[in-house]
Image (cartoon, rainbow, N blue to C red; front, side, top):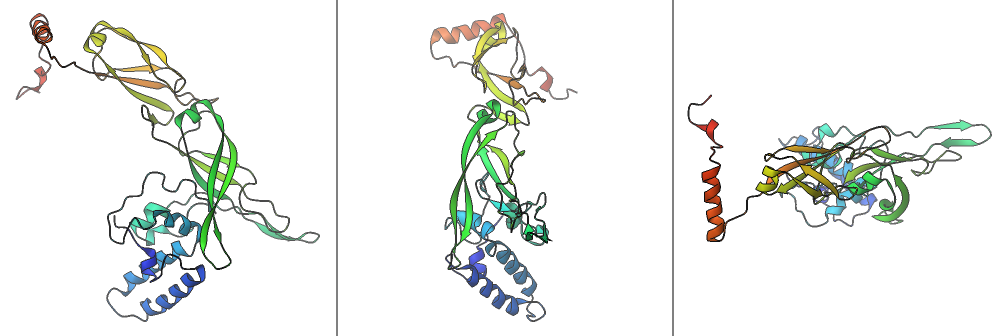
Length: 323
């Protein structure tokens, strides 16, 4: 996928004001509209122009897009970093209300999400005048697996786009304190009532919806509520059985390895995953057998004795012609 320089598409510098963006779009739209421009690529360029304008005219999208800075140039191979949009606030029901299918894969990878609806409603009340509920605001936050496992109170900082009096977009930090529910899963949302956009008149403020993402863990992988761990064991621990101390999100516990265990065997620690009040998650341990390298004559002789005393062919099912 190729990176798209939306400023280049609009023939603008990155410090352009919002008014500059509108003027540049109108000028180029008149020039590139297929009804006026009869060149073979006019329609394609007109779509590219519309895509660039869709992003840069929206302070929220523009602030998030500007995060990539000058690290990328038009046409370079590009893949959005995981959770690149974490911490940015987007109003309405998602990143865009536009049909993203009309735009490029690049746009889709960044702003193609559209979920929920904007619950801004207004009306005229005789004694109160016009009032409208504020828009809901959506953002993604990244937390540790331990935060979900225990359930914690956490202070986070979001980036709220603002447009100054000269029409330039910047972000201002916005800190909030929230409770991370015990056992929340990636992709689920925490709703903070009244912490979205302000209403008009006597209208109530909208809500803030925070989508949960997890920081990659150095030991564990996650599958919905279940935690997975690869556990290295020695050949004798696997063959003879052993009790091994293993890490969990709630602290270390002792795990019994049954005698005769093979690589790939799975063991379960019940309730050691992301468990909520009504749903349980577990931790699954998959054994990997680590064979020590013989570096002395005595160690090599021990391997030779094992080969003699315990002959086996682990490849017996791989002979040519075997079913």
